[in-house]
Length: 358
Image (cartoon, rainbow, N blue to C red; front, side, top):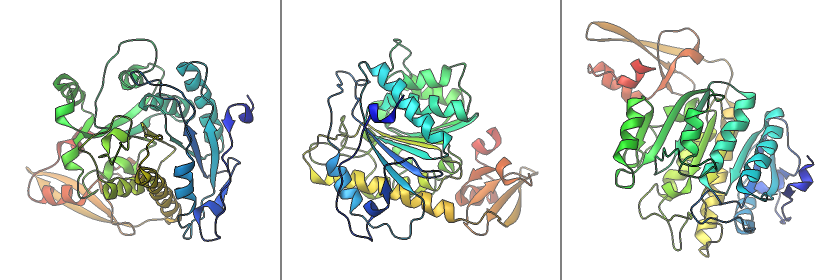
């Protein structure tokens, strides 16, 4: 499969030396970031695959500052949708695999939320025991139909025998939009699910769910809408502009990040600020990746022992990053990411149940 047969290259924009667009190439770089724009929304009810123009997003993205970024960035272009939605899934997986072979992080922008299945499938071919975090206002566990839709893709991921999922975290769900049975089921199988209210104003509570994530997908329906809608399913409630940018930076800071999807974006929006927001969402992700790549490999840790109900538990703090971990193992990769507030609660005698569950 030739990449020029399935990707339309982006148009050129004139940029200054200090601007991000000055870093972009059209070749998939080793250990870099690859932007892939997608127009296939057929996973939605009455969705289509009409060709969308992402030039407004690109224009805003290219003119942002490149700061001291060193991680190479490729704007690969726009994915040409397949004859069917399933064809698009197949084509996308082929491109994602090309990125993974070069240890590059693909970032898919646009398309319906079910394309997360292809991100997981492509990554599963290269990596086992995947940590998957999704930001979405909806928990949909339908298992109806063979074709991929935004209603059944999560069920397909969680039930596929060929997939190896280590942890799944669902962040930003809204109680009034979800079936009670879906929420109950997620809790019964002991997946972490976090309400929107717990994500507002600060990233501290949910940062641990991004720290080891291999795959993160964002359903733009989880973001409060401007004008004619930031997402194709605009919502009056959701994460605000500053909050979602802060979370994108946290995603970029993941120690294991290998793939990102940003779905259900309303690329046809007439509201200029929606395109500007998408550009800044991408920029903050890129910033996080660059910061993570600059972190020293060797770390030192402070160790704290806590007694809860006459049982001793251990917390560790990374001296460089000030991030917290739970567990006694000498190998940090075997410790559970946690937050300082969980350590403070443990000192008071309240140990978060998720720490023991993991």
